[in-house]
Length: 279
Image 1: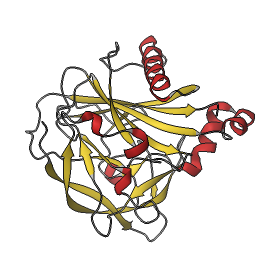
Image 2: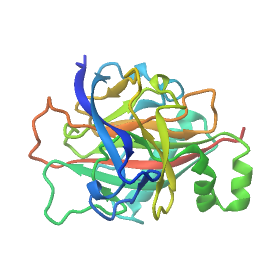
Image 3: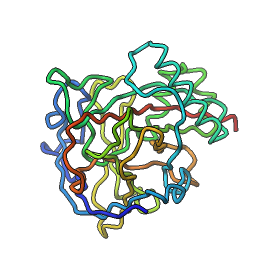
């Protein structure tokens, strides 16, 4: 059974210049990539170890799935390994969600622990994001869909339910102990007060997302999965046009003070998926 811990959540507070919040993706160091100001708040982080089935996508905005596929190392853009992984994840989501189509459109590797001197962020290699956020706002789905499908097809698919889902898992033999991912239960979030739109300058796909601020009553309920392995993965919502269920999952990496600083590289891979339904 997992043990709940405490950790600092780096909530959005304001902007440094009084302008609307914005982020510059990937090309420069994390601390210089935005006009955001944050405040650390000590929160309880509930460990889902041995309680993995206690959460699900439509109730909490995320769930834990098993991975029994073939990809355990980083892959190159356009490689057979990338195509295989996209197909594996597409098949898993289609079966789990009874979706008509799943389009895996983007990936990123995030490394922590022992890094090589020449490693630096780029479009597909990033540092863990250390403030709670949602990668894409619902109002930005049509723009994303039009990039992927074209205008005519987008007009058709937007008549039915559309989701954007992130599938995140450790990669390789080393479990994630340094800067693991924690996800906030949608049921504990006030969508009208606790999230705030931000823009992404020069975005190729996601032009707008959501930032998470501190709840006035500190009601947010945060979950993580201790020592997460490569055969385990999160599926969590970035957006869902069905408002009768959980619509998104705020998430962030956090500093786990209960684990020693690793002397080996720990890597995660995430893919972003446009999920379409016939009805």
